Image (cartoon, rainbow, N blue to C red; front, side):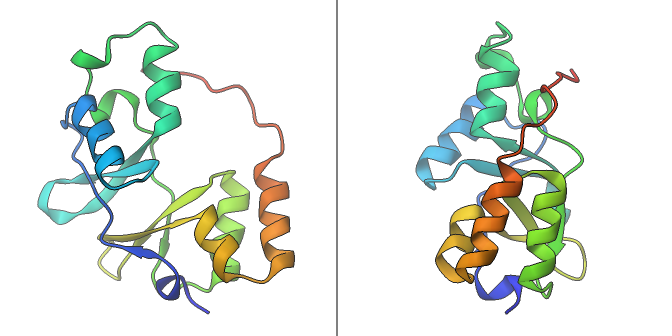
Length: 147
């Protein structure tokens, strides 16, 4: 099985200059917890904004989200996998980077999809899902603001 077989196609994306308010609105409209940040019309991912990024990098730091953009709280660099990548390799990338979602790119590096932990849980062998959950749940170093 390949990534393209279970990914969510055509995810909602934003640019670095998109207002954080609009990024959060995209999350609500598309019922998602992450929005890839892409370079304009090239659609090449340069970062990702998660619902956790919004909370930890803005509200918890006492910053006013009304004045922030995606660039101000995105995680970068953006970890990606190719659409023809094997699910096992995708799992390895998610585990190695302790991420619950990963951006899917085509041969030209354009953002064309997303794979979430839930997608894998629905589609992949039970043992692999358990291993992914175990790896993602290991304590990570404290989040450090880079802004």
